[in-house]
Amino acid sequence: MRRSILSQPSVIIVLLLLTAFTVAVVGMSEAAGGTLSTSLVKTLGMTLCLCLVAIAMDLVWGYCGILSLGHFAFFGLGGYMVGMWIMYARTEQIVVQAAQAATLPPTPQEIRDAIGTQIFGVVGGARIPPIWTFADSLWIQLLLVVLVPGILALVFGWLAFRSRVTGVYLSILTQAMTLALSLYLFQNDSGLRGNNGLSGLQNIPGWESTPQSVVSIYFFVASAIALGAGYVLAAWIVSGKFGSVVRGIRDDEARVRFLGYQVEHYKLFVFTLTAVIAGIAGALYYPQAGIINPAEIAPIASIYLAVWVAIGGRGRLYGAIIGAAFVSLLSTWFTGGRAPDINLGFATIQWVDWWQVLLGVAFVCVTLFAPKGIGGLVDYVVRKP
Image 1 (cartoon, rainbow, N blue to C red):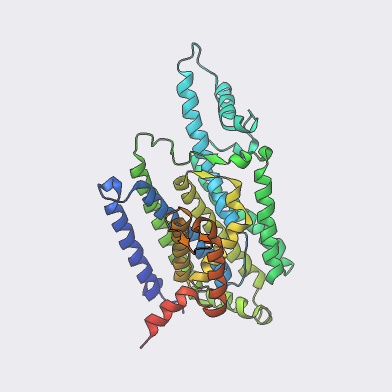
Image 2 (image 1 turned 90 degrees about the vertical axis):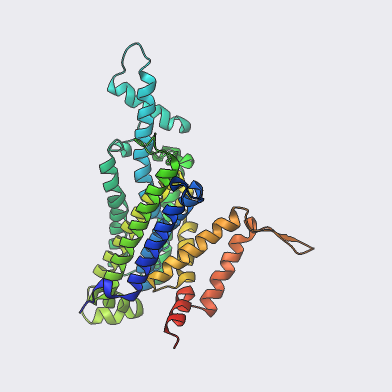
């Protein structure tokens, strides 16, 4: 019988820590008269979004055994969907304000043409592509944040799982899907401004008079709520019979199939659901980052995601949060030039260049010597008599 989610100690602890962290950051933020800068609040908010997509990765890999190297593509697609509305609505405001000085009021088509020129002039275009048909509607674009990653995952998963592609071959397929999507988006005629991507996403239409310090708090709190809800949902999924079947698929898929379970249905559900979670995380992340481009969807990003989960502890939802938060914040510190260089006499280690090497070494060491990751260390401390 499925236990109540709120009766699970790990869920209670994570929610309490997340609540305390959120209250502390809000209280110490620049918007509340504190010392935390707006840029730091945005960094922390983006970190919470990365923790959410890490939970999705842990659910599909750590519990279901599907090493997806394409989940950051779903993350990026969620960002593109909400970014389209932000760019369109903000550009529309600019065009309308500029047209007020004209002798004759512009027609709706002239306004739309001017919007197209403003957005796509950087890639030599002037017309709004068909995929921007609903970019003027916030609610439709929010719906697409869920539908686009979900449908792509559903179609891809159905084709892959019905063919019983597993293991490294499935990982290669997910990576190929991500690479194909990334290369397509790099093209100027993709309809999403090619390599330029979507920029200025921190300027939310309708909030022009709201300081960025306040806007950053809104997104930080929304990211915290999404992370808490995502954690509870994932914990609920893996706590009952469904979770037992999913773990059985991870450990011995053939045996679960022999017992009469429709393995493909379980895998497809988990794969699609985690893609939707990743899309929601991306929709919250990129308005805080301010820009999204195809490089965000490159396969290396999904590999980083797997590294975070492995370091945090695969098969432990709180481990995914620990790994994503630890590695992403450490990455910000090293690549932001804050880490002091080390002079060895014959050479100088500059962490901006050597951070990826350090991350790779850490991943290898965790895989060989601490397969349970940081989460395993937490388990040891908690259960130690």
